Image 1 (tube, rainbow, N blue to C red):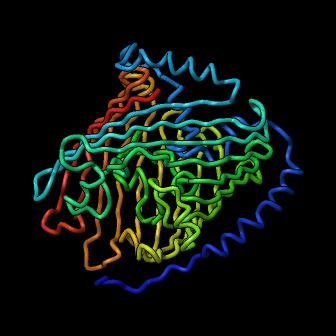
Image 2: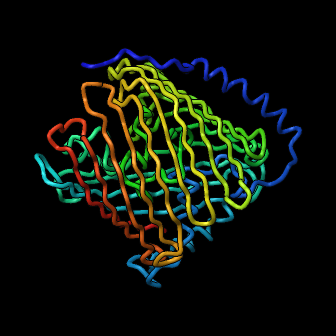
Image 3: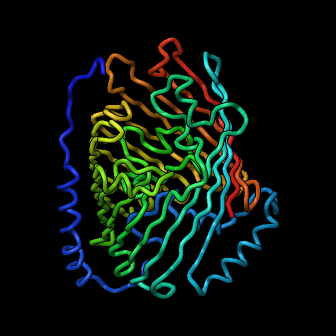
Length: 430
């Protein structure tokens, strides 16, 4: 690629990380032997769940927070799903359902400037071993998804190409047939002291996450709802190990198929080419007196080149921080460097803050954020982005979000110095 500086980031490769993964359980076992056998609580979980992890989606769907209206368009179905979950409680089975629709409109310019899409999600957990509240339980987690365009000609995932942006105006919301995007076994040892996951995994849920990382619930621009300096692969077969050696520290590491796709089982790519993605994360979760709890994540990752697809290798190091300041305010900061071989981004920084509750309703959320990214092709201009949104809890089932993005110096549209993107999102979860 023209303008490359030839910089290479030296990080640990998949084989070394695999060795680290294999040796970690012994150290964790020593920690378990010395640790008190207490049942985990939601507050004590290390790390806190990523916003789009299946267990967190189930919590959100079951919460049904109060809104402006007592009932919503799908309130009649809530008792039916609640009764189903109560009937299957003895079997350890819980399911949830969500539908999210997004409309985005960019300011004037060439190409398609409007995009709309929808996302149907069915997710759940099934406790197959252990008892409720047990410390050594095993669960089967699953998540199915369909993504579709909604009448504008392109979905939101394609709008970045039309406006020349270096990264997406949304992290998801493309087009995808109904598929089982996640399916994995999760085994607990000593509560949350040691958790092993095996199956089809989404790496964004276990490495370099953030409190605000969800374009279905919070910010939509990919600089905030994901972090595109990371060249994480799509969902693929692999293993993740999360260990909690102390109350405030955790380690998350693992390997998985670098050529995985949501729409395939992954057996053909994992065992034929053996191109791996590996990550190693250390996290610190302090509780600051009179301030609140924070999560400080430090992540190194490496991705093999894809022989079958021709995808180059990539590697990087990232920091992700979110820190509560009182009961409502949660600022965040993220920074990352990489080789930029896949997503075309060398360096990136994003920061902002969100506010939960006590606006029009107790369950509303608002946020603002800004980001900077340096293209791997240094002949292109650095790109900047900002976003502000307000999410209104309309009813216990329904959320309406209105926001606006500003993209400055879109890397592939040098004649457009500033592009604005209006965004509207409707989400139903139960």
